[in-house]
Length: 128
View 1 (cartoon, helix red, strand yellow):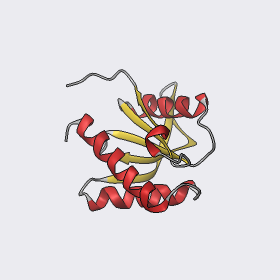
View 2 (cartoon, rainbow, N blue to C red):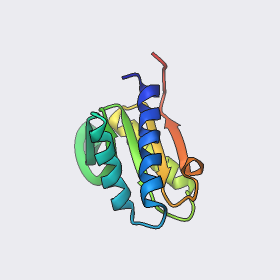
View 3 (cartoon, rainbow, N blue to C red):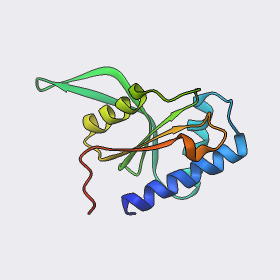
View 4 (spheres, rainbow, N blue to C red):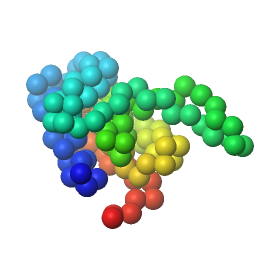
């Protein structure tokens, strides 16, 4: 699946989850439901994926975790908070750099209209 099609599918699944659950739950509930919804669509999903840091050639486990990695192509970071801060976007970009992935989605399920809480973040993206 092309990455643009994949991100559209992820967003569609997130909208379905949000319409069903609404805002106000814990982030972990949205992560679990989004993973389930994507799996029901036949898409491979890994949750709470450890992201190591390579420093001076040594792999260090620093406790970084991606909420979801979808089809080994897209990192999805779910939030359930009043406002997204620049550090949230920086977190996704850092995860992209550390995993050598190009596209991430930051989804804030706390929004009344979910499309207002979705940010696409890219790391040296090349359409191919």
